[in-house]
Length: 132
Image (cartoon, rainbow, N blue to C red; front, side):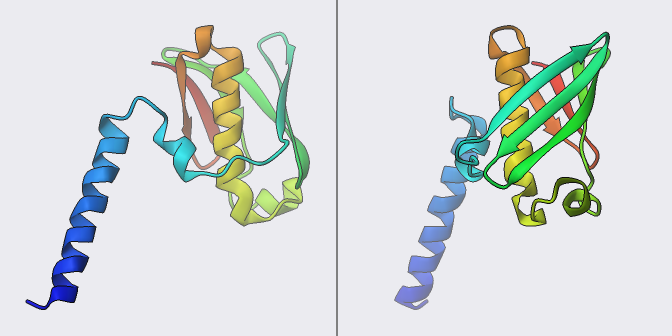
């Protein structure tokens, strides 16, 4: 086996071990390390009964999304534009979508769950805010 091939295999094994450690053993949020946070972005919330609006404002633009309370382990459901509708509804490039959605999920958990002890799950058309 050539030295270059051995070096590539060793690098792959080390990277894989690091990725496993980040996901299963790191006390930090590994997603925070993977997705870039939009600089100067904000998330605001309005409530009207059992629903309301989530307003995202960032350097790329701003848009609002409908939210409503959930049931079971789901605290709230935020409706988001699916990938096909993203640019038409937000006026923001599709390649920024996941960074923005992870930012909204993190900020919603921080602001709207008891002590920030919740999790979020991004689906095609929703962000679920859940209890741990």
